[in-house]
Amino acid sequence: MDKKELIRYWTESADKDFQTMIHLLEKEDFTWSLFIGHIVIEKLLKAWYVQNVSDTPPFIHDLVRLAEKGVLFLDENQKDILDTITAFNLRARYDDYKMEFYNKCTRDFTEKWIEHIREFRTWIKEKLRSQC
Image (tube, rainbow, N blue to C red; front, side, top):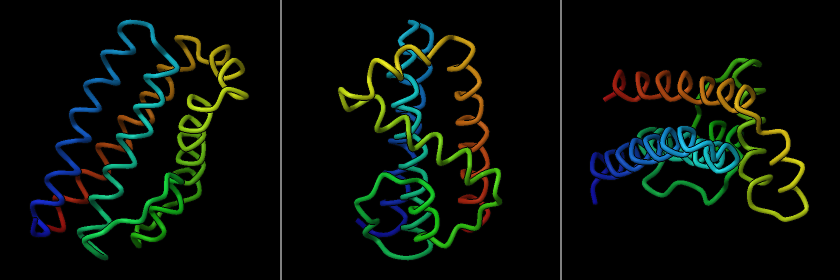
């Protein structure tokens, strides 16, 4: 695949995952909705990395590190948001965190963080389009 195809792969895959995240929210599967939200942002950051650094994004899940490696400049608020979203990846996957995370994932909590994911998704997609 050439660079454009790779970017399209990551962004289209993120768009499909975004729909899955919304579907899980509608079904009140809050924990997994946020887990998939993490994947949405990770894939978009990998598209950014491909566009700006190299065809092979790093195999990391830490969203702030991924943004830094992709030379994507974030303000402190964005870093804080991405740090929290990164935690959704760990807390949904590992048994010692699951119950604590499950109890935290109320509808209000989940909707708040889905909105942050939606806003970051829009922001990074606009940046991707503006640099094509």
